[in-house]
Image 1 (tube, each protein chain N blue to C red):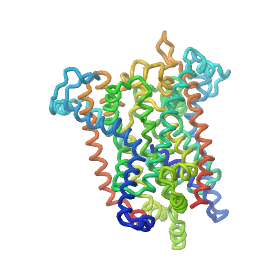
Image 2 (cartoon, chains in turn brown, orange):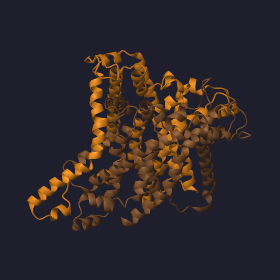
Image 3 (cartoon, chains in turn green, orange):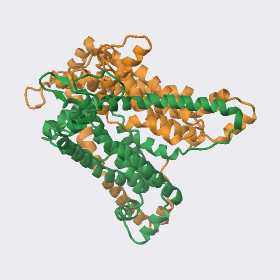
Image 4 (cartoon, rainbow over the protein chains, first blue to last red):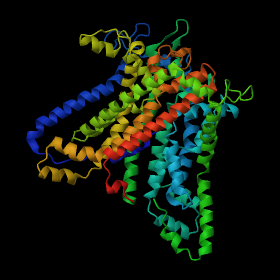
Length: 297
Length: 324
């Protein structure tokens, strides 16, 4: 889950124009732009190829011209409304994403506030401990977690997501702690004079002033749960599965056991639209959040 | 990170009142952290302890209450003689040794490129980053289309270059396909971290070097690279853990996914994680799977410790970064 730091850094990394030594560098600069265009094409090619392939005839394989003609836009309609029940699994995805994200963002902010602003025995050691838990490899944590979930009777229910949601996320705790540590302390002094305890200070001063980081946290954790595969695949029954699992296995011709590749791609791309939108929305939000933080700091 | 009294605490008048306030604050502090602790205890720490207990048992079913026996180190001895497990370890080692340098070079290369004063910087940054946002299942669908034996883009390019145009990537070159997916799908992340690291290098250093007549190459090796070594270390550690946790991508890239999780992954792409998972979910062998996971974790810890230790010799420490 390094995405948080990344998103935050992405905003901080504003373009910096350096003064250039005019014309003799023109050739170098042109070469630079050629290189970046070629590399960007390489990085975008798979997505474009996926898109073009999603418009192909289901029964004709992937051969033929790169841009298929005629384009079978029907594939998208089929991916959405065929026997697959896309909207049913979309709803499941939204539910899992919501219960895994919404409470987590708030409890992570609360914990981040505690680490940034409250004095307590063992605080720093505890903080390092929280960070260290992000390094527990999946291999060792998953199997016993699965077992505990079964023992607690939460297998094939959404309860594990509720617990993950309530408990928050170590990385986001780190994010909020960093953010709150740079908050001006005058505000809490004023609150303390008014007799506000930590909980009120947090709810009335810190939380309303952290729209930017909250948005970042929602998008980071939300896109994580949106695309989550392995827990859902192993824990949930078919009727509760999210698209992250169903898109991989749902678009098969039942009689002949082969994947309906163009339709599966159409489904995959439809499934990718929400996180993409969230990312583009985040870019602006992030910039604004940083501007306000800068003004305050 | 010494705990210093903040001014606010120092102003509290009576020592006794201060002590009780501190106790109350400590209590409140752990109260604020209780949601995290709740989840951590229930779904992380209890399971971790149990995982170790499981690895010493003959647990072969999800149901704990039937014929459970303590078998000592049997599972570990069995693992030691399991050639398939060692092959999974070998494949994991190869994956780590390949993907970590590939990530590093790609991420740093892209960051340097973006830092070289391009026009439309935001556009390029978004284009390199966009793959990171694509959910893993869609990444796999896309790469299945890329590597399709007849008509996939990779085979078309190979054919155009005069090579064979019907390579069966997912079956015959499954690790190569996985590597392409991983580089394409995650390099954007590290690129942004490196970019932030590059922006953090004071411009004055370059000015001074320029005045001293240092060329671009010299400036890179004497300023940029040394000052980036802490970021490189960070990326190496994250890369190591990212590579060690690769599990879902090989499953999703396997031909014939519909016949059950991980059942048709080529042996080339059966890494330790997946091997342990298969022992549990295909064979029902919980105790053995847990033992393999623990062996893996111990080896991983050892490698991580070695990596950190090696940092003494190549990570450039400055006062701002490590002072306090």
